[in-house]
Image (cartoon, rainbow, N blue to C red):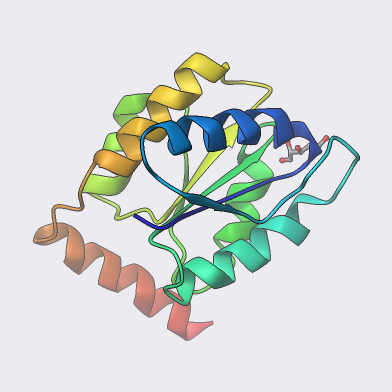
Length: 147
Ligand code: RB5
């Protein structure tokens, strides 16, 4: 699976842990930065990543900031992006199964690394269930087109 990672300074260390974890499970993840703990603005990372996922260059994206909120807000501005802020594996599972979320956002100042890796694992291994959920997602796509 093609996965792409991005973070701001607050999420940098967790991004590094996730990248190492994914490599250990055989997933090669592209890295859109940031590459150190110097302060950066999260939209500058979220928007190119959202563009790349929406264009189909990657199957899933993972964005990390302090709370996960800024990354979710920014990524969801891009048409075709369904970014879900997840703080537990249950939400991560249903974000994929029901919402077909294509971007996971995490809050590095909220969610510890052990839990974050479980959330990542659940997110990438859960599969969209289609059926009635597809109808609901079409309604969201229609809302996007109106704007
Ligand atoms: C950076 O201090 C912080 O505001 C950012 O990482 C994120 O939490 C925003 O939502």
